[in-house]
Image (cartoon, rainbow, N blue to C red; front, top):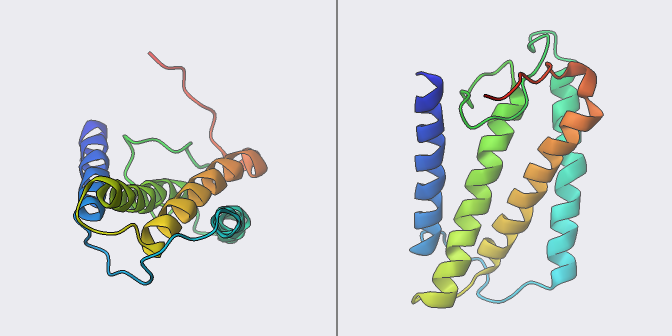
Length: 147
């Protein structure tokens, strides 16, 4: 696939995750709101978890010599560049949860604990990916000028 095809693939998949959440496709664990402090803890715990996972890939000898910064136009399934995968799945998780919350606010189903957790963990995963670009900056390829 070309770079533009990967961007379309990523955008379509994230939109499908949002639509699935909107229609209440997730099975409900609990149909109640989770305290903000618990959601914040889930968000915050996702960041060091992502740093640990990516650190393990950093020391993996089969990892790419340099990782590219997360980009919607790149293949998210490259085993040698884990940031692409976790960037993509972070958006999927976030979109599914956000869709569920929007569907609960304006649709026929309740806002579930699942939806709230997906948003917190998805955002935490994305924050963790960007933290990895800072913590592991020596592993990151130089950014190419835009335009």
